Length: 261
Image 1 (tube, one colour):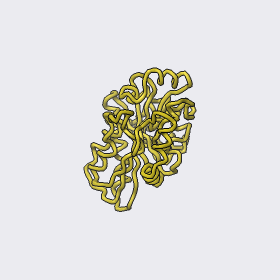
Image 2: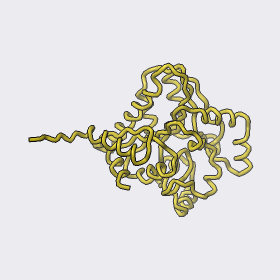
Image 3: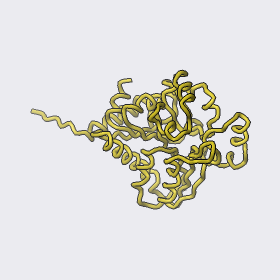
Image 4: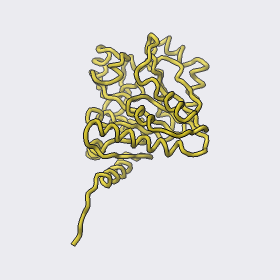
């Protein structure tokens, strides 16, 4: 007689291993999914676990950070110092008139928590013209901070869907006309302010030409996204296909969905 026990955590471990094999991931953490709210908490905890592993040693390191609620929840759990760490923002929280969004303190929050040095992204998220974009992206300070990002030892980012409920729209970084154009051109999500299609290609649009954020594909370090929920699944898949990320923290339902694609 044999008895098989199916535990949610055991399933998650299996999904994580299968995802690593299927998408050639360096890191993968899959967490149980119960309710929508508890799933977000679980994924943020899973992200915290990975962050803690990278931060809790005495080695000098650079951690690159995006923005988003999941990352913010993960950072709020940190209760230790990491004095040899430098934090660099990979995207600006500033819009065209200087206002910052609700999630603008994600890299700064980590810096305060671990008492690290902090590099702020020295430009608004989107330039207003090609000339302005060149001005921001070629100045000495921008090149200096970009160089720090290029040396990052690990990167953590969020992934956003494209729609009226997406933070990048609700926070006013893009308007309805821009979202309609992106959707018409096949856009389904964004990563660090770049809008991508279902294959992970950058959508050919004016707003994408104005983005100033760091292109994480340039760095071959662990690039880990923390994202969950049915509405984000196409964007997560696109980020995997396009080579934007090589690490993932997500919920078991999303993991199972990704394994069937």
